[in-house]
Image (cartoon, rainbow, N blue to C red; front, top):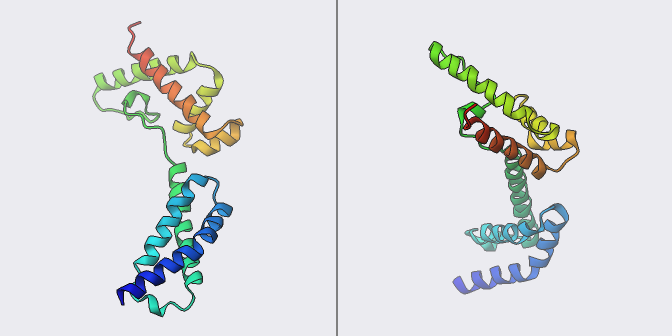
Length: 172
């Protein structure tokens, strides 16, 4: 029984691995993910308990592949929504109104320093930072609007963050 299962699984993998790779290649922009996705399909296929009940292994395999591809797409969309992480409250676009007057004055001072630091930079990095943090645009929306790549938007935002940290650490 175990031998027949292993033989069956081996035959399915051998006879469909090229088709499966072509299937993913036709649907993905990032070809480096093809091997991982194919492996995930085969792992899910191997987990099937009663393989003898599968009437059409190829159809079953490509059904699994479509589910894996859909899951990959959802994960990709989630990655697109990622933000540049900022851990300093002074660089957070939404400064909270504090009840303590001393804290409020400090926040206003830091906001003014931050605005001064941002104004020292060229317009494109400023726009990227402000659209992302004040307007809530995604990196892809900013890239499309400004006609630059997504990675360039991230670099511009990181440049603004680094510049603000450097400038706000200096005494006037």
